[in-house]
Image 1: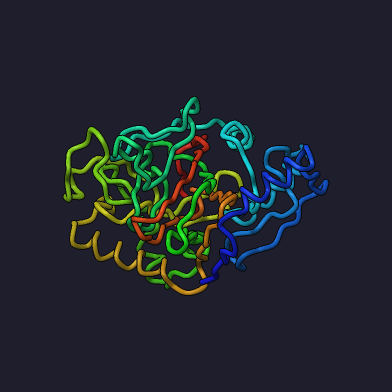
Image 2: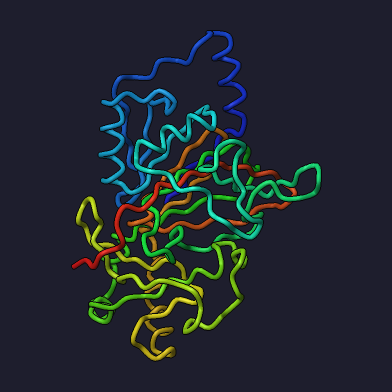
Length: 316
């Protein structure tokens, strides 16, 4: 496990003061720097203002994105329009999903999903997913064509907890023992859509803990990344998952073995947030989760989601 340290929670305030004094944003270098976070997943991109990304800089960001599957940008000061504009450079954006509190969006931006435990003056949540743990998952893998990527921008963060973990599913596939690799050849998993990653029932769906009759879509267990061609393990989320064609007992046993691999050392990193961070991940080649945090602390994140272009396809 690699930890990305949180050294400040007040960057956005200090940056806005500096910009106000200078009258403009600091001009970033022509070409951003790329620093790998771990050997298998993640890279920090330095020297870039996501509100003003040149075509040359974006080309390098896109190459790093496909090479590392997750990118971190520190010290950003973005409006909602800036976040949407940068996100759109990767593809068409989905509207915010409907979760336990309905469709929670930023004002005037239906593409921005508000992730927060904060309650408004009326006592109602301003966002979704609360302060609890969000288990390992791939965003919305229960859809026939799941989203390609997600970007999360931190606006308020708790003093501790709430770390986001990213795991490489390419490295997880490579770490499988030979007999387990053989057992999943040609097989698919039904990805359940009944509950979100916080364990909340999705609005409009019926509660079910039976993997045979819950709502979901089958996808290959081993997929080929549509842009790189590299094979990746595609698990989605554990609850109500089902390996098509197996008795439930055998399906559960196979899934338990697959999921046990995810927590092996060296496959993931934990990102410790500070205000002004943007973390983006490739839903086709990673999974992510969130640590719980003190519900009395405030956490406010704005998320965008790049829509899927193709359904998951079998990989080697």
